[in-house]
Amino acid sequence: MDLKLNGLNTTKQSSHKSDLQKKRLKKACDEFSAYFVKQMLSSMRKTVQKDDFLNGGNSEEIFKDMLDLEYAKNMTKNKQLGLSELLYNKLSKNI
Image (cartoon, rainbow, N blue to C red; front, side, top):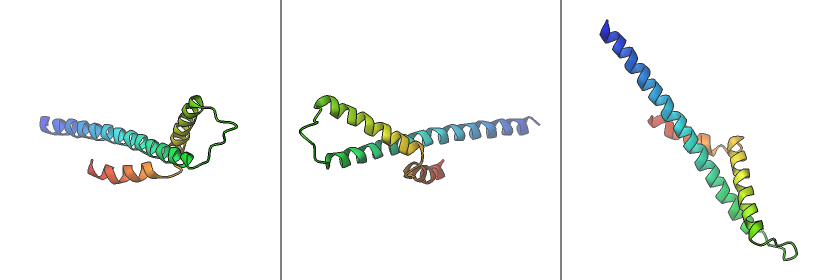
C-alpha cells in the first residue's frame, strides 16, 4: 500500500514539475516572440525616411524604441502573429 501512495506522490510531483516547465517555456516563447517582433518593427522603422522638420533627436529615438517594444508585446499577447504558439507547440513536445 505504501508503494501505491509513493507512486501517486511521484506522479503528482512529476506532473507539477512538468506543468512548471511548460509555464516557463510559455513565458520564454512569449518573450522571444516579443523580442523578435520588436527587432522586426525597429528594422522596418529604419527604412522610413526621416523628416528634418520634425526630427526629435535622441529623445524621439528612445520613445520610438519603447513604442516598438510595447507594440511587440501587444502583438505577442494578442497572438496576432502566432510565433509564440508555434514555438511553444514545437518545443513542448520535448517536455
